Image (tube, rainbow, N blue to C red):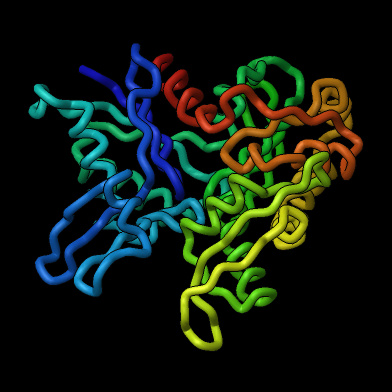
Amino acid sequence: MRDLAIDLGTANTLVYAKGKGIVMREPSVVAVDRRRRQIIAVGREAFRMMGRTPSSLSAIRPLRDGVIADFEIAAELLKYMIRHQMKGQLRMRPRVMVCIPSGVTEVERRAVEDAARSAGAREVLLIEEPMAAAIGAGLSVKEARGCLVADIGGGTSEVAVISLSDIVTKTSIRTAGDEFDGAIRHYVKARHQLLIGERSAEEIKIHMGSAYPIEEESAMMVKGRHVVDGLPKTVVLTSEEVRDALREPVREIVAAIRLTLENTPPELAADILDGGIVLTGGGALLRGLDLLISEETGVPVRVADAPLDCVANGTGKCLTKR
């Protein structure tokens, strides 16, 4: 029997197989034929269709802000992931652990459980993302010592202080990578009167995004549709402009970290001052974010090794011990 741990993320879904580590990494996108109500692609193949589908097809992200927005499509995504790992063992129903944002409601929690069961899981276990991220980052969560992890994913940013294998205080906000992309799209439209898609905004974020002034500023050509005449157009976007576009969502993440620190018991706050803040998730890769957070809080900040994998690895480690 192969137990599976799943990091069901807004942007990407990672699968950890017991004894093998991370075995699958796919965008959380499903392409649907609207006329026949049929799934035609999942993961990378569906992601390539985003923004390029005819009216009869839709490339759908079933998760928004870290929670399930489309139950049926989310179940299909999970079914694809589970069946891909259970080839040759189709009659065997695996035990599955799924990580969820710490701020989800009971209804949202139940939706994840139901989706995993309908996808073929015989037993569904849940773990909160900050705990999984901390374990995956190698933090000593079992000790009577405070550690602070900030997991910045696609749909949510989860900040938590952990001690003695439990979360002492936490802040969960629905501002993360998707908000970064949205802020870039809004800025380009307002400043350059150019409409760009989600994929273009993500590419701009990856190649030029920063939260803090960098040594070598850069620029890139951005293609889109002009707001006024509706014709294709190319503009030059600078890294300073992208940083300006990201200022507000970055400020909200910094505010969430400050709030968590303010609610931390004094003894644990002293531990965090010694051990620092650890950043995980795709948002941790935003250049200069660690420097900005350190400057704003006065606490040392470091980015975890392989920040994109921390939640999946942490979830897998917890499943292995069960």
